[in-house]
Image (cartoon, rainbow, N blue to C red):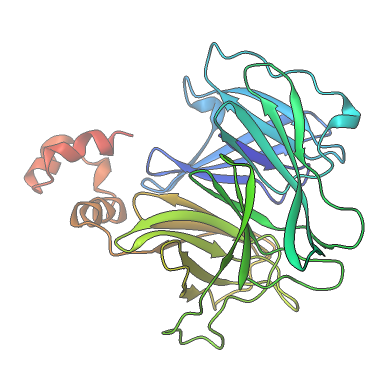
Length: 331
């Protein structure tokens, strides 16, 4: 499990665990400390990580050269990561992932057309051997005669890394063509996406943006990358789109029209349930079902809504709540 963090207090890491729990983790660089708050969606209650027994993970933390922190959570018995000299730390990190025995980080992206008219992609890709056997750069960006891209988001699907959004020196990068890096072959390719033919929005492609929040879902039509939020050319983005990884066609999902979220992060809980958190000067949580939930999930949602979980089991049986739900209610 990986997280890119910073010393900013208003942008914590956001993830879902155990079905109903939302985790908000902040890194305080000045104190070299971590603070985690947990919101239980089922019971609408808050707790802290210290209140949960046996939940403190082992963590490696290292910094990029400009101060961002990369945390890698590992199982007991793993070797320590090698000590990395400060000058050799990644310059910047817009995402990270584990593949095989390596922890990969991704920095500035460059695109050059110097090589016979063919487009070449270069990225500052840094990897650390998780068995304590050293670190290396496997790719570096070009310094001249190339278009630079930064502030993008990465999405990892199997061995492929998709570079979503971002900006160059003078403009945002559209989402029509997406660079892809293969971690198995260490090679580049390009995905040319297709417009949403059924979209009722103003445009058939998502608006160009920096730092969108992304996740991957399974659908009957194959896997899809869901993107939400980010910063557009003139304002914060509050629309949500999905890119099908079989057809590479965009699909417009929805837009949060009520407010203009300053920060928008997403995480998946249950099959196809997406939680969204953002700020408008204060903290807010939203939820969206990306597909119709199962009837069993709807029943549990009703138990949560009417707070039937507070009743003794004898009353739950009288209300014909299936006994197999009882363990779920105790979480």
